[in-house]
Length: 134
Image 1 (tube, helix red, strand yellow):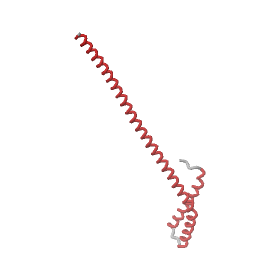
Image 2 (tube, rainbow, N blue to C red):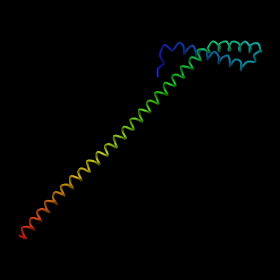
Image 3 (cartoon, rainbow, N blue to C red):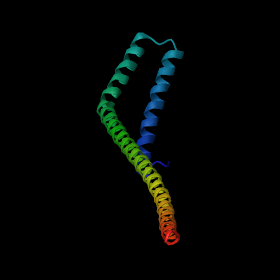
Image 4 (cartoon, helix red, strand yellow):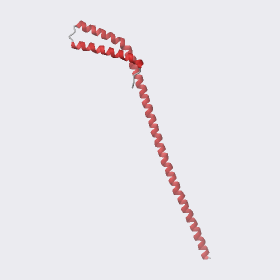
């Protein structure tokens, strides 16, 4: 995913601030600094943190909003998927029931043909009996 150009300068600025801060931390760890140097470093870091606090808070709020939007989108997609699965299940059930109804109609139509043949044979046999009996 490509970062929009409008964010490049701001990201570079934040990276530069982070790099500078890490350089200061590294220097404090590597050197045996006097207490006054450490206090000055602490004051500078505290002042810089305070100036960035509002931006960090706003960025945190935007991240929360993005997360909620993303979560809502995922939930919506899952609900759509569940609906699609349920529709597919209902359609398969309807297909099975239609197949069963068709098969039952075939069997019933065949049974009616058998009944018709049996009835014709019965009528024929009765007439033959009447004709023979005279």
